[in-house]
Every structure is written in structure tokens, then in C-alpha cells.
Length: 552
Image (cartoon, rainbow, N blue to C red; front, side):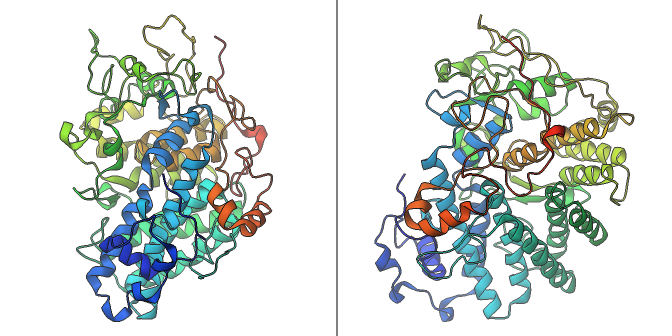
């Protein structure tokens, strides 16, 4: 992977638009040449289709920046959807790999190999503001919140308000300031979208709602709700205020309004782009929960054991997972013959994959957000139990063919997680117990933490697999789902029973934006390592669940 040796801020947004849309300059091209006026696209040459293409590029690349690493080898493993089998991938053992994080960070901002979504989006936002395209500008601002909240949730302080200032050095913003700006921006977006109800914008280019303003409004309010719950432990008063505002303004309540990023031949589902190999398989946590619950989504999410094409079928239908963080000396790609693999709908298109959409936000997640808010005593338009039940129902209706009766039976089930298989056919069994004892049926008499564990565990199931970024974020915030301790940590700052709390600032920034990056460390509540918690990660440690860590 080639790293761009330049300030993350210097390349002009309009020049980058040419690079991405026309392919005139590669990511390894000469920076000075790219930065000359001869390569700039003037406002006279921009038409609405080019503007829409720039937005679509930002939507797709902003959600998919180096999916294999930022999602699959970081988030999916650390939230324990999957377990990493490749012996040379240290993120399995809680290591933040500098080169991988570099490509993710610069890929969001400037590296054209991964789309440089921030630069694309800034062009759209600035151009629409300068040309008084109020509605288009509001949608661009909404996407700013959507894309930047993902980046700040990974690193904490990030480059935000000064992005695109044209200087060789640019300061980072504190996460608290970024989040509070998000709420201000969402106020602006809501006001504009409400004034344009019934209209469309970027139709033919927008990859989510094809420009439907009313659907965008519901998503904007739902995104406010997500961000409100994110800060519940650090600023509960503001969290409640923003959450109740979201509900009053109207959020996503049915699957017809889900925010789904369309996949096409040119914008392929990124999970499908990496399932030609076998570097991961089902986690023991996933097996314990889904098989124990007798979850109707199990056969929609996973292939029965074993292998990516069920090359090693069993005499009976079985789902098999393995513990996370297996010792590097014991991991191998051949372990795929012992584990379940993601369902064949996420295989490459040439092997029967269906190019599933990326699920940005669904009714199920919104109901679980509301359920947690209600659990905290906020006005969410229902009780924690009723909203929890509606969240499960929305997820099962969207992901399965289960009948209403089957869904009701699941919601009311007393089933609990089971002891996982650990390593199929291997004499070195770990004898892991069930990862938790929570049932599906909402425990009305349980403690706050028990109810919260139920809500977040079901949200975790509903977010699988493409929203693993969000699932890992929520596991850091709440500690749920409980998960197993990893078998081995190779990170001196994070033990087997702890979580990676954030990514470290990337090497390219220490090299090319050194003073600003060193100043950004001062915005953290601790050193620049993987154990330091970001601003919103403020749940009292006394309330934080310890991952299950059984003896061998």
C-alpha cells in the first residue's frame, strides 16, 4: 500500500474531483502537479450530474474505505461477529496495525485509492453553499455527519472543522466539539428538509433514497437519536434532550424507510469483495448467542459448517464458531474447514452472491435505540419492553421469512446462549461456557444492566454483518454483548479481558502533520494508545461487564 506523502489537507477538493471522476492522476502522482490551477475544475464546468456523481462517490467510498481492514479485521473481530484465522493478522490479538490504520485514515481524507470521501463530500458541500443550492447542501451536510461520526468514533479527536484549509498543517478537533457540532448541523438539515417535504434532490445519483427528501428527513432524525445515545454516559442531559427531539421530529419506524446503500456492478458490496478467501469464520460468541436463542436469522446470516462453500459438510446441520484471539501459532487458513462461514448471499457475485445493500440504518436499530432511551427514563414513545419487541420484529421481518407466529414465539422465548463448540474436531477444547445467561424474552424484573444487555445484544444481532463498525462502537460504549475474553493479546496496553477502545493516530499524520497530531494527543484523556477511551466512552468501570474468561 502506497502512502501519500503530503499534508492531509493540502490537495484541493475540486482537483481531487477530477482525479476520482476522470482518473487523470494516480494516488502516487506528483503532488505539486496535482495542486496547480491547471488541474482545477472551475465552477463553470460543473453540472448537476457531476455534482451527483461526487456525492455518490462520497457515499460509497465513505462507507467502504478499505473494508477488509477497517470493518472485517478490526470491527467485526473486535465486536466478535467473526474470528480471524490468518496467522499473520495481528488484529486478531488486539493489535492496531499502523499501516492498516494509515490506509483507513488517509483513505477517508485524501488517498484516492480508497475514494477520499471527505474531499469529495467537501466539494459538494462547498459548491452547493456557494451556489445557494439549499436542499442539496442540506443533504451534503447530513452525509458529513454520517461519515465523520464513524471516523471520530474510531480515533476520538480528528481533523474536522479545519479540513480543506489549504495549509500544510491542520489542527484536530476534540470529539466533544465535533459531536456538539453534529447536533447543530442536524438542526440545520432538519429545518431545510422540512421546508422541502415531498421534493427530491440528486435523483439518479443518490445511492440511498434516490433523493427522496421525506426519507432523508426520517434518517436525519434517526441519526440524531443514534448520536444522542452515544453520549448518554458522558452528557446524559444533552443526550436526553437530543433523543427526545429526534422522536418528536419523526424517526424511521418501518423497513420501507431503512437507509440502505445500493450495491451495483460498479459499487459492489464490499463484504462480497473479500469472501473469495477464508481468513475468518464464525465466532464462538456468535454461535453461543444465535444457536442458544434458536434465532431465525441464523441460517440467513451463516452457512452451516463447514467452509466458505460448505466444502466440508457435516452429517447434520451444525453451526460452529471459534474463540476470538486464538494464539497466532494455532491459527491457520485451514481452520476454515472447521467453522461456519458467512451466508452465501455475501459470496462474490460469480459464486452466487446477491450484492446485498450496505445497511446504514434500519428500523430495528432505531427501535433498540428507543428501547435504551426508555430504559433510561426518556420519552421515547413507548416502554423499553415494547420498543425492544418491535426492534426484534423489525429485524426478523427484514432479514427472514419467519411468520408472525414464529416471530412472536421467538420474542417470548426463554432460550439463553449455549456453550459453543469452540474448535470442531480439535482435541484442544477450551470448554467455554455460555457467553451469557440472558433470555430473548425481555426481563421486566431484571436490573438496568440486565435489560441493557438484552437490548444491545439484540441490536448487535440486527446490525450484522455490514454495520460491524457500529456494533464495535456500541460494544465499547456499553460492554455488550458480553463476549469472550480473547485467547491471546499481543497488545501491551490491552489485556485479554479488555477491549481496544480506539485506534492510535496514524504514522502518516505523525510524519506529515506532526505538530497538529502531537497537539491532538492533548485532547485525549490519556496517552495515544488503544486503551485510552474516547470522550463518549464514559460508562463507569464498576458497571462495565467483564468478558467471559473460562479456564482451559
